[in-house]
Length: 189
Image 1 (cartoon, rainbow, N blue to C red):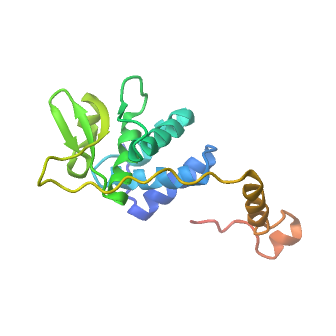
Image 2 (cartoon, rainbow, N blue to C red):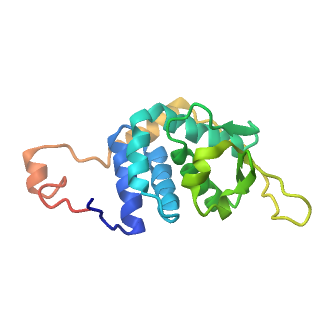
Image 3 (spheres, rainbow, N blue to C red):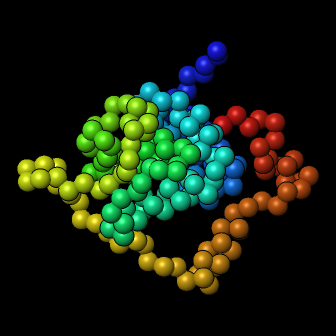
C-alpha cells in the first residue's frame, strides 16, 4: 500500500477543499479542515476519515450543528448511536475543544475521556456512547463561560454581503484567462 506524507497545512487545505468540492458551505469546510488536523495529530488518516464522512454531507452538517448546540448549552449531549462516521464527529469536537478550551468529553461504558487527553480517538470512537460538555469537580480545569449562538443575520444584509463578495469574482472568459485569472495549468496549491 502506497502512502503519502503530508504536512498539517496540506492535510487542512486538502480536507477543506474536498469539503467545498463536495458542496459543503465554506465555514463548515474550514471546520472540517481543522478537524482533519486534530485527527491527523493523533495518528489517524484524517483525509480518509474526511472522504468517508463526505459521503453523508447531511451528517457532517448535523454534527457541526450538534456541537454548536452542545457548546452553547442548548443540548446536554450528542449520542453516537446511528452515526456512520463517528470519527468525524470526534475530530470536529476535538478541534472545537482545542480552539475554545472547552472541556468536551467522550462518554463510554468504562467512564469518560476528555478530548484534550484523547491519545487514540479511533479506539474511543468504537465504544463511545455520547459527547458531553463536562463540568469538572472543584479544583479541575475551569469551564469557560458559555456564549450564545451568534446573532441572527438579516436576509437583506446577507444578500448585500453576497453581492459584495461577488465583486471579487472574475468572469470566466478567454481574455480573463489570458490575463491570469483562474488556475490555468499551474494550479499546484
